[in-house]
Image (tube, rainbow, N blue to C red):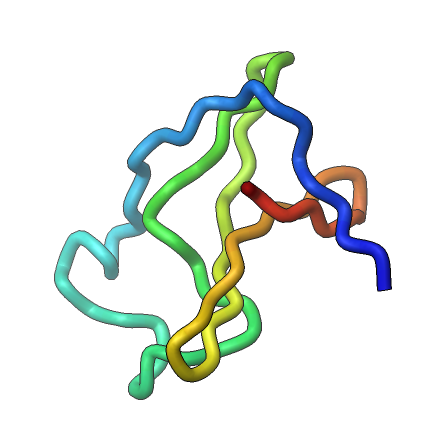
Length: 74
């Protein structure tokens, strides 16, 4: 399995969704394969993409979808 990383530099911006601002969580357990984070990444060309989190047990991975491809953040 090859892991593709988002090329640097990029900027991470706080952008919580309405339910995150209200103190709610996406799942009852807090775990899941595609959880919305409260942040977006600003790419070099000015576009923004929501950062998703895959979280199981005590480890998680942050990633975005760009051109139908999953790119992980370092």
